[in-house]
Image (cartoon, rainbow, N blue to C red; front, top):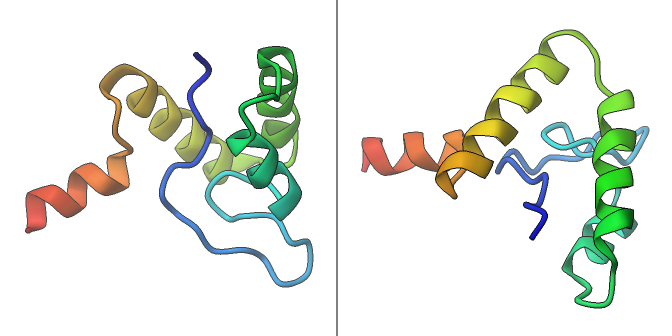
Length: 84
């Protein structure tokens, strides 16, 4: 199973339409939820969205996505649980 790139920072740039957290557009987010989408598309999309990022955004995404893959929860959600 390929883990969704959503890192729980769900705000879209009004100009590009890309999410500030994962750099996906609405269509890509919908495709990720489609059970018929192949893992090959998801892997390619993970590469593509990272080409849309640079600097601190890319570093933050990589760190957050790695944490989510290893722990099953995003860093943002983890911090929310700690503060509750």
